[in-house]
Image 1 (spheres, rainbow, N blue to C red):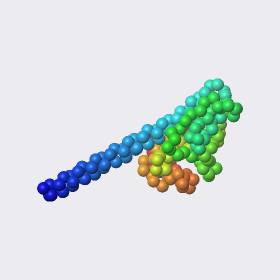
Image 2 (image 1 turned 90 degrees about the horizontal axis):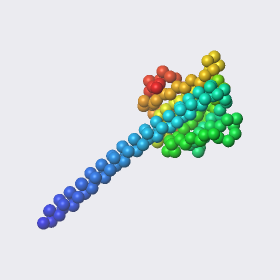
Image 3 (image 1 turned 120 degrees about the vertical axis):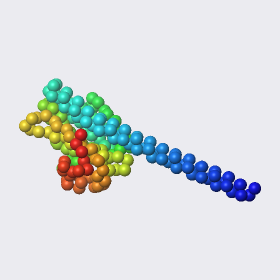
Image 4 (image 1 turned 90 degrees about the vertical axis):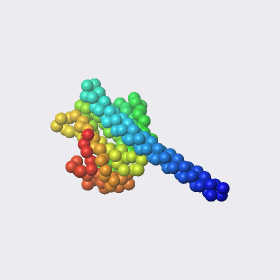
Length: 183
């Protein structure tokens, strides 16, 4: 009888361990899926905001001010820097930064000109839950064509693009980097 009780206890402990391992794997999988969804959502919000207001500015000959507030995780769009006409919410669990003048900007203001151009040119990084850059969205304003150009780059595995070291990384980055793919 005593031996059967020992096997019974061992059997219960093994089953509980297997159950906990499966729950842990499921939790990790769900977390990764949520992260991917939020990163994609953030990329679309940022890209669509600039793309939409670039087109509006061009056709309406109207200037728009876009304020990227990463502390609040919001984007404010206004005319003439007055009351916002639209406020967009970015996913809260992600981190973002704009690199401008070799410095990280937690709050950045860009202007979409009447021609649909952006001033100044800058890059925005979207970071995952692990604080590694997952996307780089670069906004270029050209005097010749006078229209905003947007390039989106996806990180395929470069772990050195961390939130803490992004300024240094940004200065050494080039579009031919094997770990980054243009979309």
